[in-house]
Length: 342
Image (tube, rainbow, N blue to C red; front, side, top):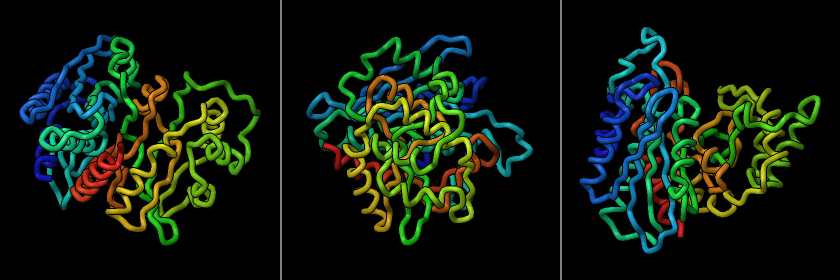
């Protein structure tokens, strides 16, 4: 656990904002850490109008070539008005059991945990499958010149990949006696990628959610839970545009088996840590690099479970942090899930 915090502090100190100079240095740092632990590493670049993108693939071979791929992006949102921060935005710090600074939660905290999981795999008994880590750049600028360009130039990166685990899920909501954790099985497509609306106005919420259950992106639990979406534990979610986007998504989306195939491994690992925890498969309103895998036909889920006290408020805003308890929880749960995937 100390390694995860040490690596995260260093990762935050690299300026990988949109115009930051440190993306290549950050990739070299990750490569050095992993190579020292026996992980195979390969660096890639992409060219675009924004800037050159810097990416890394790390690999621990298993008993067979079939692969589980961990994904994280190294670039971060810009810092915004630094006068609004309670701690230095561009320098890592530890305060009250938290690691603070731009990128702590999105997405360098997950990246540090993924690095630890690759290190564990290299130093332990081989898994039945190969474990890889793909670190990409330029996600915050839409991903087209980052992961999109990388996969267009190197489609072989997805050969043998049976599952991708990325960002976009893991936020907890209490509901009655249980704690539900969002498990991203789909996401709203960017406006330019979305099909044209066929209905003059948004349809009934229950019908839209039922479409999601029918196509495999949700479980039945979400039908009972969704009536509380707009106000849970004092947290407000703006769902007005969400249902319209979900209707568009489910109308065009293929049937998905990702939750049925892989949800039980994550749910079991999560309950081992939190007995009253349950997964809440969902389609998220934001977009991430997950869509590049999904559009290539590769199963992908977004899941990085957070401690219940960890706020999401600092993402793309001021005072971004991740609690050390969240890092510990995510490490244990994802490690347990990887042990359960066969």
